[in-house]
Length: 435
Length: 173
Image (tube, rainbow over all chains, first blue to last red; front, side):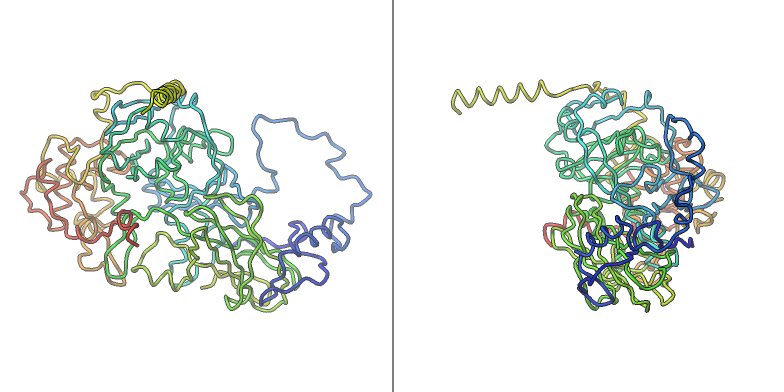
């Protein structure tokens, strides 16, 4: 586990906040403490001495040498080289393409995931698709089967939507009997959030002329398992997008280049990447990935099928495992919340293991189907505490406790885990995963 | 409908049509051969051909056994057989035989995705043979039972009734 430390460099430990108002147990403070605290930080008035202070008055080396020239495509600072995805492989060397990578949620701020850090989940690798040879075919129960080139799709009117994509299996490590001691991202990082730009699928379907008996649409990718899923046509009419751009640039290969489906709020697996075929049908086709996989085990041995929407969820990203608190004092708790229902309505935070809760501040960028950043100031007294966050969405669905979630399902259920996360802070300031 | 309303409706229709980019190329039925590979649970899309478990032994051993085991017990790849009666227990074993609700899914998945390192390299005949072989490993068909476009959708999978369609049930919650 990485030993990232809270420190002055990340501007999260408040040097001085005068008389903040406690709002719940464990040292949680009024949301209004932010502005005051930020002003203190901005003025630099009460910052503890740092290494940088020793150089005040003397020019730094990079002031005395011309910097490097402009480049064609930018990369993060070399000092940020540790901010990477953690990769995994399902079947080891026999199928390196079957695996994924976790977004390092604990290293990021704001709500947009950088394209190079968007989580991955591939069933048989990332195909190397030549866009000039790629076609999107719409057929089945339509009056005019059509085939679109990527160039043609690029001429359609486009819309943008900021949306999270969450793997249905996200957070599966927390279904283990014992809490895995890995980072926040290595537990919950099969979710990311981007601005997606493309053509509303409804527009293409209208041109193809959907027949009245078409109730489902089968989306298929051009990867080496031709991954496919059945999607109710209602979703297509609502908000399905044929996405070509991610955060302003063309999709990354691992996100479906040159074209993917985006179904906001639904299981990531259904936002089919490398989209090349859409077939209108009367009923679901019972694909391998909607029968053998992506089905939810019930305690009686039966399984739920077609549970598309991702549940309301939140997690504290700072602090989280791998971080050490640098002694008692003020910290800003920050985290992410999202819901497949649309808007996050509210996030509560507890610093006493769920005995008392206080509402967190939802940041101003909150949009439906996107990440919502929340924060709450906190004064750590130096003793052991249990930090938790609990989200509620626009349909008043509340995040369940782990015990409640486990009770709903059968053994080895690893999809749709969205229970409340507890981070244990010990008296040394070390943060760990706890149930 | 008044004349005026009709005129408005026509104007809207024309406006809509003229705004449609309509940049797709027409697709002919022939264009879909080899591309439209999805098999429905009713057998829709199954190609001509046939196979039995006995026919499938050699190709299974050659192309599948190294990952799935000769008896489908699983090795580096997942188990294909076994697990009957385990779904409600503490250690459920979900295989084609114990879990999958439709036999058509087996043909569909083998054809599109297997063998894992060389997908889409099998003939339809070989896919029928392997489908029959995996069903036989699970005791679902006999070793000489013919699996083809007509018989496969009729195969009764042991866990056929084990799934709840949550999408259809959503309005009743």
